[in-house]
Image 1 (spheres, helix red, strand yellow):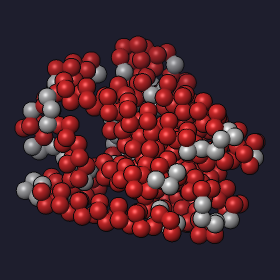
Image 2 (spheres, helix red, strand yellow; image 1 turned 135 degrees about the vertical axis):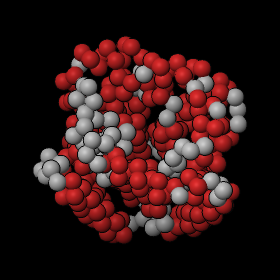
Image 3 (cartoon, helix red, strand yellow; image 1 turned 30 degrees about the vertical axis):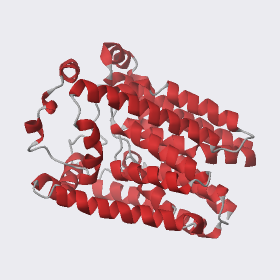
Image 4 (cartoon, rainbow, N blue to C red; image 1 turned 180 degrees about the vertical axis):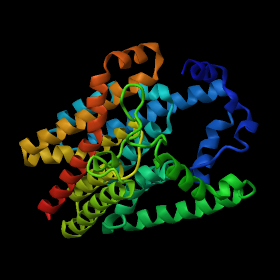
Amino acid sequence: LDQQQQLVQAGGPWTDAGYWRDFPIAYPPLTYVLLSAVAVLEWQHAKLLWLILNILVFGVGAVAMIHATRPRFRWLAALIVVAILATSNLLLALGQITLFDIGLLALGCALVLRNRLTSGFALLGVAVALKPQLGGLILAYFLIPQRTRRPAAATLSLLVLMSVIAGLWFSHRQQTTHWPAELGRNIAAGEAAGGPMDSHLLDANGVNQMLSLQQLTRSFSQDRAVSNGIAWAIVGLTGAGLLLSLFRIPAGYERDCLAIAALAMLTLTPVYHRLYDMRLVLLTMPALVLVMEWNRRWGTILTVLSGFLFFSTSLLAMRFVGARGRAFAAHHVFLQILLGRQQALAVILLALSYTVLCWRLS
């Protein structure tokens, strides 16, 4: 890790274009086209600009989520958002694209909830283009309400067109042309026994970096095919139940809030996500405030589960940043195991809770 940090400070081998010549590409070409605006800068300038963009976009998205909530319990959303922001400094240090993407999703959803459809869907489109696996389901949901159907369809059509153009632009590179196959090979290799996504492969502190529903289902069956099947069955049934309930709920603010919250949590359940993806809980704030208005006890439970996700993420991420973080990790092994093993459970409980609330509202 020390050597990696030194490489980052010096620019690392990745500042040389030749380093990427044979590098496997696991994202659509459009993602790299959008990020090329930062890549054209020198390393030190690009690093500073990326940090500023992450702080601004994630911060503005978080504040927008507060303003998208109902007034009565807005103070609760504000407290949770402040806690999320206060515990995200370590994730900013990692420089991962996820915080930037979640900030765009939060700002886009907040604008759509406030009926600012043009700017909202523009931001949602950029977010889905950067990281489709985080915002794809949410953008697809907006095809259901009549109010948002046309802008959502236009955004998806534009994304498809831009993806085709980006693919043709990079068609001379084999890695770009065959990125879906490369992504499939990476996932298969990671899920195999001993791979980095193996739920039984723990780091030195007994915690797996990858979080998914499979970590829970493999407690019931050691057969990977069976445990993966159980996980996808749970997600499929939950998703089908959510979809049916959404068609029964009258269109409006309440349906949009609950759908965004349920889909945000459902997104994190069936496949492997890293710790920083848990900041997607930010999108559940408007729904959380609604639940607190309807039922204080249920709202309190959801608040505790949401708080557990972002606080546990911050504590677990400490072991990646600096000598102090590694020392903390070495002396708090049990705490890391306790937190890391329960995150997948908290996510599926939140997804199921918001789905059940959709049924009750219908």
